[in-house]
Length: 288
Image 1 (cartoon, rainbow, N blue to C red):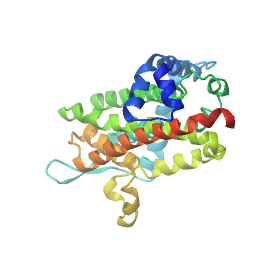
Image 2 (spheres, helix red, strand yellow):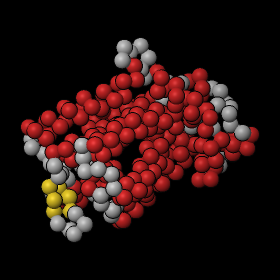
Image 3 (cartoon, rainbow, N blue to C red):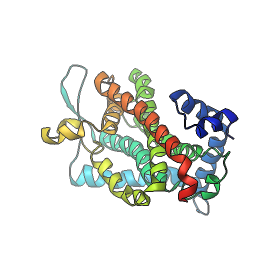
Image 4 (cartoon, helix red, strand yellow):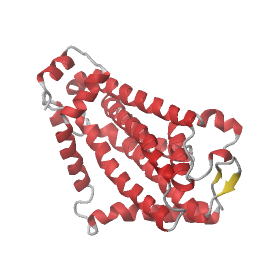
């Protein structure tokens, strides 16, 4: 539960990055309990249960690989350590799609689930001492669990049927951490705005498709026409997916400029999302 100083700061409408991080740490146990609850609810009543965590992404992988890899003849191109353009193998293409979809499922799940989080839990809103900011964190925890399973499958695929592990893998946390910060900030933002604008949830499927096809999941960044690149280069998810693919599949060190941009947007999104949530939360009870 929220500590007295946290409640007093909320009443005085105070906010700071340190307070945002401190609140997360204080409520870590509650966030863990709700995350576990959300994971369990996702497979309640299912015959195969938790097996769908593995089966669902594998089925989607097979579908997308058939359509984009076999029918449309898709492939990835990348620059090796010497700057020469290389063509990825079919196995690399499948694993690259799987990796990109794992990241996109994080963001798509937030887009779909966050707008209705606060609206769907009015009883928690009316409890003054309940830390509402835990609800978006728990959703991220659920989606993060699914992502960890998918990412682990991708790692195993690279080791056993792909190019194998390499020293470049030590850079993976440098890309994953800002993406997770970005996801959490987005969850806070959408869950707060969803209380005021109920139409936010209706836009989720469309925004998810836009994000999917604008994040270089099925194609190489080098294939993007210059006119489109003027807009797509501002998509941090695109840079995150591209950096992860290069590190994991081809042992490339991250490009520092795109990586710095991903970190900047990740930290900014985390802080901005928490700020918006804390600014709007005082009116939640009146609107519900």
